Each structure stands twice: as structure tokens, then as C-alpha cells.
Image (cartoon, rainbow, N blue to C red; front, top):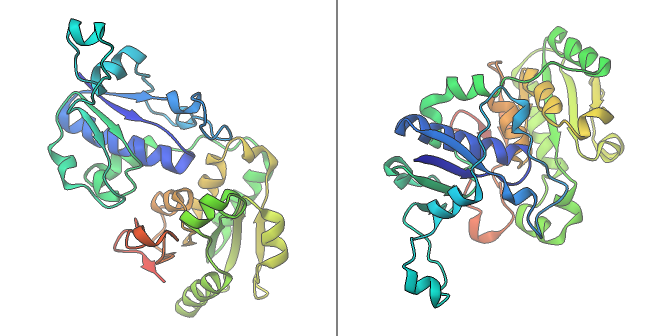
Length: 294
């Protein structure tokens, strides 16, 4: 008997999936196991890797037999002989939308969670546990340590996440997610600087640092383009640096969502009101009520 959660996508998605599974396993007082088959399956995004092992959490991988026994109904001997297609069992729970699913609170064990679970309500009851689980490893590069110190010394540090990459390059992903406009960042920056009478220091994080360097208007404020080669394969380091900032202007990305959520500061978090470009799901936004959406 266990909670098995399908892990897929990048770091931010993996963290949401873990957090939902962790909350459910604690409620049911049972083991949490991972189905990591997505990372080796044909057609999956090979640029992604399982990254959760870098956090101080217990990693238990479900075997193929455990996964099959949980997600499929048991077949009779005759059904097997006739080669009948297996049917999903009631233990297989597929997230119906990006909104919070109230049925989640009534799930029993065993259960298999398939989805992204991008809503704080799935784990808000154990937020302190999740924050402890997502304790970042120490920085290994001197450049990261220097930026960390600069953030801590700043009186008004602002992390700004500019997500591009596949959001721009992949037509399907672009239609689904879209990218935040420069006008969004300009308005968000004005809101923070207008409220806090301090000289801000900007820390820009992007998967396309060259674009950020050439296109983002810093309005003359002291700024740092965080571009550390070693972090390409260890993205949790960038997330760690983001989380140290006092204020956050996030993209429509689970990556910067987690950086802001894990932040210990009491500053402003500004998120895009339009999280998805796809018209059929534009009403969904995972931002907590305490954040400002524009």
C-alpha cells in the first residue's frame, strides 16, 4: 500500500508533484514512491532529468510491477488469454484540470497520482514540512557564493525571472504557455519601487541570459544577470539564489513560483495574471492569494 506519484517535467513540476504526493502520504500514513518512467520513455522531453534527489528527501522508486498493480484493474485468466486490454483501476487518479481538485482530500491508499498538481492547496497544511524537504544544497561555485553574499547585503533585492527557452522556440509550448511581456516586467518593477523607498538591486534569472542582457530595461538600477554555466545542469542553484531575494517578479513558470514560495522574505511577489496563453485554461492561476497578479 503506497502513494505512487508520476514524476515528469522540469524541476518546478517535479516539486509540485512531490509536494502533493507527500501531503497525501502523510495523511494516509503510508509510503510515498515515485514512478520515474517518464524520463526514459520514448517521446519524453530528453532535456529534462530527475532532480529531486538533490534535496534531503527519501527517494523510493516504485517498480514496474507496483505501478501496474496500482493503475490497472486485475484481469481474470480468461481476459489474459483473450488479450483483453487492461482497464484503469479506481486507484489511478488523473488530475482533471489545473484547478484544485476537492476529491484529492478523499483519496485512499493505494493510489497513483498522474498530473501536475500545481496548486498550493494540495500541500498548504504541511507547508513547513515541504519547506524543510526542499532545503537547498550548498553552493559549489565561487560565483554563486559571491551573488549569494551580494543578495544578502542588499537592502532591496528583487529577483526577476524571464522564462524563454521552449516557451519561445517550441510552437506548441508557445501557444500553450506564452511568454510574459516586457510591459509586465516594467509595471511590476514600478509597483515594487513605488512602494519601497529604497534603491533596488535587480537579480535577473533567465534561460536566455543574452536576451535578457540585450532587451531588459533595468532603468539604471544596479543589476546582475545571473549566468552561471554550472547551474545549467543544477537548476536548483538558481532557484536557491532567487529564493534569497526580498521581492520577486516571477514568470508564468513553476520554477520561479517555487523560488518565491520558498523565500523567507516578507516582500512583494508579483505574478502574471495570465498564467496560460491557451484560451481554454486561461482562468487557472496557481498564485497564492497573498501574491499580486497583474
